[in-house]
Image 1 (tube, rainbow over the protein chains, first blue to last red):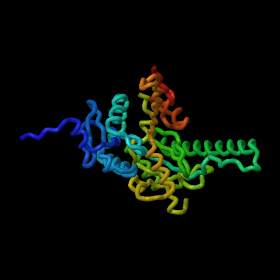
Image 2 (image 1 turned 45 degrees about the vertical axis):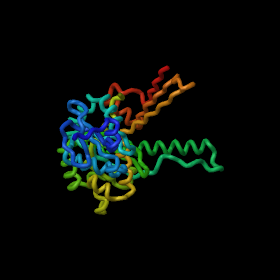
Image 3 (image 1 turned 135 degrees about the vertical axis):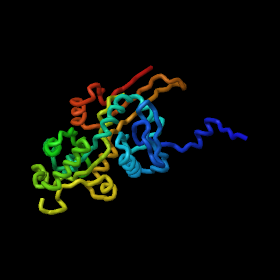
Image 4 (image 1 turned 60 degrees about the vertical axis):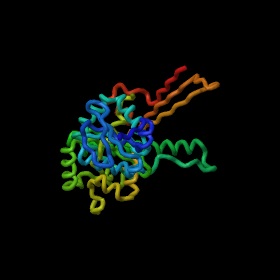
Length: 229
Length: 87
């Protein structure tokens, strides 16, 4: 006797899948991750929602996959995105994603995070005039932008020796980060240089502590450069 | 830079996830947020008849970042907010 099940019933029993990113068709993922082809050379990397309950776990799963499959472009991980929606989005920019998957095979991102006060001022006190407050706000923003520019130049100088592509700074809660996309071989060279010549890379003027360097990461900023579908 | 703890070196992604240092929190925040796209949809309906649909796709990135994108690869990048209206 053959058991039958309607498509609607089958859907009801299928666990909801959350999309983590895109990868090449044919990539192999270990449980609970799944790779499902959606185009000739493109596949969705996803996981059951209950296996990746929070953003931290999604990041861990993605990094595990990235270790053995460098050809992966992550989606934003803060909010969940259902597999169907992710497929819809990915198919709108297949060409861009396939091209960048080839880049991802040989490239990684590295981050330099700098300590810096927030450029945001609290509301003015009663005894401070609007003009004074606005001037202070403007000065603080200018100082912040200057610091970001100096940090970018510093990071570019560090990476340019290896012909890296430098990306712009991004503010955080306690400072800001600068990201660079570099080739795997370049990353090894940068690490070697830092180990033997840290004194050459003193923090840029105006930034007290040396930056925190992290990597290698998957190409997280790639989708920010995606053509709008 | 004499303090060994201040020597420049790379923290691996696994180290970042295992520690709760304030600076590392910033790194994770940045990574989780990367490539954020907001999508909003609005329908104006009268007597169950859909009259107007407005869709807004918003790519979140700093002006510097968008400028950099323009210089590099995505020449056909659209404006950050693109309202679509159909009636």
